[in-house]
Structures are given as C-alpha cells and as structure tokens.
Image 1: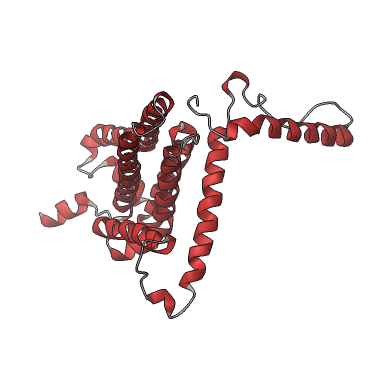
Image 2: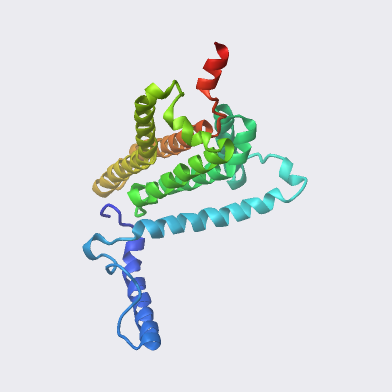
Length: 278
C-alpha cells in the first residue's frame, strides 16, 4: 500500500461520507443551513489523510483492552505473585515495564523513577505497539507521521518544564541564564539564556523527527520488499524492523527520562557558592 495508507484507508472514506451526511442533517435541523460543522477537506482530498489518527486510536484500543485483561490477572492473589512459566501477555508487560523502570532508576533514581513511571511507561507502551503495528502487512504505524511523534514530544517538553518549575521554582528559569558573575557579565548571561532556550526548543523537534524518520524509512523498506516478493524475502527485513521498533522506543524513553531528570535536579546558585568559597 502507499505510504501513510493502510487497511483503514479502504473503509475510512465510506465512514467519513456517512458521518458527513449525519453532520449536514444535524446542522440543517439546528441552523436551517445546508452546511456542515466538520472542518477540513474530505478524506483523501489534497492529502488530508487521517489514517495515522485512526491507527493511533486502534493501538490505544488494543493496548487498553489488553492492559485491562492483564490487570485483572494481577488482582488475583496469590496467583499474581507467581510468575508464569511461558511468555504470555502478562509476562510480556512485566518485562517491558520492568525494563523501563530499571532504565529510569539508573538515570533519575528510584524515587523519581517510580513517580514518572506512569508517564514514561505509557509512552513506551504506546510507541512500542505503534511501531510494531507497522510490521504487519497492510498496517501503517502512527509513529511514521510527524503529527503523532510531535504530539508525544510536546507532552515530554511540557512535563519537563512543569515539573522543573514545580521542583525548583523560578530557579528552573533562572538556571537558563547561567551562573551569576556580576553586572558586567549580563550580556553573557543573556546570550546563555538564548542558547538554552534554543536548545530546549530543539529537544521536542529532534525527538519527533528522529522517531518519525526512522519509522517512516523502516516501514517503507518493509513495504517495498513485501510488495515485490511477498514470501520469505521480507522476513530478514522484518527482523531488522523489529530491532528498529525496540531501539526507537528505547531512545525516545531514555532521552525523555534524561530531560525530565535534568529538570527536577536541585539547581544550586553557583554565584553564591563561589562568593561563599572566597
């Protein structure tokens, strides 16, 4: 299938026309005008595809139902504390979440890792399954669209600065100016602030572009070989694609943990400590 299209693309146009018809009738009944309150171009017109949105919703639905099923098993005591002998959905989620938690503990410590596990763990699960769905022929990964990856990166961006201010107050912003060395060095502090702002703005851009570009390229390669030679030949590329799925999930979560960990560190006033030393 063409890039950014999947099995959903075969059924979405009919669904959109049905919803559009309902919207027109509802709007006509309320306002008396023949229009619609649905904004934007019809599906498939001028590239206005929402396939990545439907794919993301499908991933959320699958992961949510699976998590609900797995969660019910954790409530069965004492069976919940006994590990299962084979790989099941429960053991898979245990391995995934434990790997994320251990990674976070190594970066920001146990206390902070347990506090931010719901955020980073949710990102890890969503990104992993969104990446992995692209390995199934006919499905498009939501993460090969910049709209999806940028939304994820912006969540991490705002969480970084919200919790940075919550933990350190306005020292989180003052830290952007660098150490206070005196009034004569104010231009250097302003330059330091500009550089810091640019670097922080670049973080969500790099996070989103890195994930999108890798998944776009991986999905394209697998799609080309699956289309040309449907049997056996795509298998090695699908194995390599699975490695890309895991690595890109890990990279996003590691960088997100690093950014949040740096923000919640207690910033010390280097200028005051330097003056006290003398």
